[in-house]
Length: 432
Image (cartoon, rainbow, N blue to C red; front, side, top):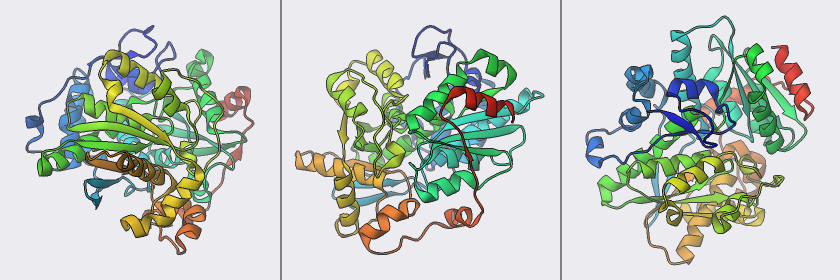
């Protein structure tokens, strides 16, 4: 399997090259040269996420030396619980917050770290590999946890100062050692633009080996598709029906992962994107025109993205598959509605929701109001205790953090201020 650029101006490469590079030389995002539908019979004997993942990912690893290690990589990184919980007639919640940092980003970050470590072991260099990542909240801590104290790697995280939750900020700064957290006085889009500028700077890359752990990385995209495969197979085996997914999304990586699972022939129905008041994605799907704009600060801060990178992947997949557009939809949810869904969550569904999952719940309710009777699964992207300042006043009680999050919050945390300009970032990277 080779991977090609969404900009179509770079030659196809094998998986290892795409993983190490992050972005293609022409500035595009790597996508599989094809996604072949799989017969469901292939998965008949797979009963765990790692087992399904190894089967699902095998074609994407074809021709790469990592294929022989794939089953072991999946067993060692995707051994995180993924409960599919019924919350109503034909309505489900896929809980993806049971990993070490209590967010769905743990699945992809752990897989990527383990995979890159295997690659580096085969071809070690004298310089550490620097993982450069922009985060709107949860990506940075998941990547930090996955690479913390891993020999041969350094992680540099850029995050928008004052636009992540208090506990998210603490997580970003609580690692130390080979992890550097840089707070930038701007929105996420500026952080993301700085990271892309670094990847497109030949002089920097000659001096400093760089790789990405943002959702632009195939090492994030591919493993995230596996929990959609697993959940849809679980549901199909029980009911004989496909499962449509409602995915809270900002940079669209998690949403595109669901699309890849659908294109690979898994029993995935529609894929619906729930966003906050940042309306770039709904506008794109409604009009077909992409218009980036400055991000708006909302309660669902991890989705405060006005220029989502993975629109390039989604556009590419839609051009390649003319039937895809009819299976997609998006809804923008404002802060007042987010608050209402959190406030009513325990009464209506017996669950406390984080602000991002609340957007998905609103989209579920909107689909039901429109008369849809298909089976829906809302993706619960983060544990509500990560947003205690928002959630607890709305539900009128405390929300207990998971044990792993408690341990992180007990550590000291520190971060550095970084001006929102590229020369400042380049200078800081030169001092690693």
